[in-house]
Image 1 (cartoon, rainbow, N blue to C red):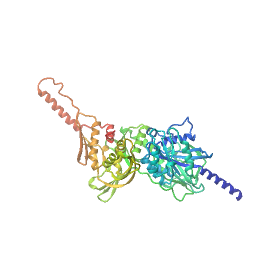
Image 2: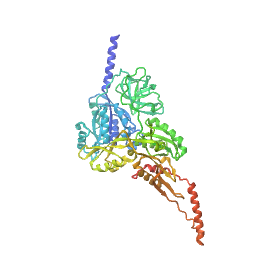
Image 3: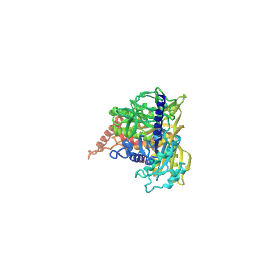
Image 4: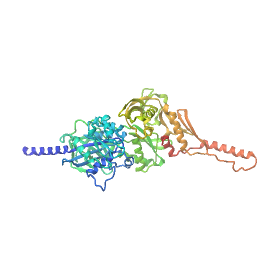
Length: 617
């Protein structure tokens, strides 16, 4: 009986090894707008995963905002069956990643699920800041990297210059670079062959205890949370009882399978494969990106390394334009949280704007995306307060507290010192813009660490900057000053001492809490003048003067006055004694005093938004 059983088990194992040898797990990494989504489209078309009838451009970008902006916000996965030139069929798991700096952690978890990566470089733009940042991220995970030069069909394409950059800036072999034009479909076959021949197959033991990495998840309104996993060890099938190693939550698996645009159920998924798990999980926040899944009755010894809980860095309050829209906003926030686990919010209220939510975001792009999704998908009209970062306050009694909301700023007399987050910014520019970029960074309280020439006319400048100065309008100014050639990437470093002040905006001596900002004292006058100027343009004139003031504590540091509408009350006095006119003017003067005393200023929605805009907008 034993003799009959052994060869059967050996054959099964050989069959599994054969399948693993024919699997390739890879990602495409690139700077924004270097053609990542377009290349993904061509690979999907070349492997006939979907029919031409249902194919659409940016097929992996499922949100309208992604299509319009030409960016990837939510990572996607697809399994591409490809018959190579050697006659064998390979299963290529493409894990698409976001390209923006706000979503770096998602990119790192996606890369941890791969054995290799295609590093996409624009044939006209060349190596940029996020190209290098993503390369370093891939190197940290010890991935095999294949450089791909895209957009070779452009008239401005300079392939030899790009090859020099690949050699000098990236330290990769320029001769191994694959030339493609994703838009025209040139070189797509070469990319597929490169993935098969240059990237290693996955390793892992299907017989070991289950060890699966969560690299993403999304919410299905009928099935609950769909977990995207890479299986490193063991296997999983429907009916297995699984546990999450970060929070010890236990669930029973209902369905497993792979992604081929649509979900394709399988009897089991095992070591080396990328797929999904459905286990009746009600909320996305239960499944944290980077967590490890294992079997409850046969757990693995250690979780996958690199797990961390994403922390927001930018904070803003969101209010409905009409106060009766709060319930709709609350419902929309709940639904959006199901699809965006990194969104953090809590209830907030303002004297001027009523009830709303204080939200934490991964960055300014994440804030914009959330705002657009709330307005589009849930048909809401919103007001956002000025974005802020998280400050640390050390009090006179030795205690410390963290605040991100100007409304929670304590009495300055009780504060010993304040600290703010700093970033390490990498800016890659043509050298002719060095002076203007350096001036911009120094204006934003930047510290120049170093700079180096990457090629004879391109340079990388490293600055340490306060995060609060970057979230305001830094990226727009950088793009404007460098005519679009500047690229920017950053990472959070540490907290440093700063001279923080709370800037209040007063309208007719009434403090408008929704317009308050936490600013560096040296920039307070400039910010106050900007806010007063913008509000003066937006607030409609009344029958009385309106004073708009910027103040720190009891000190007024900026002021603008909206003059009163003039009504000619003496127009009807077309003759007679001058005393008749004086009587009417005196009567009007008394009426104006009374109106100013009881008059309330209606602030339009556009006024709150205008304070956030720069002079360039």
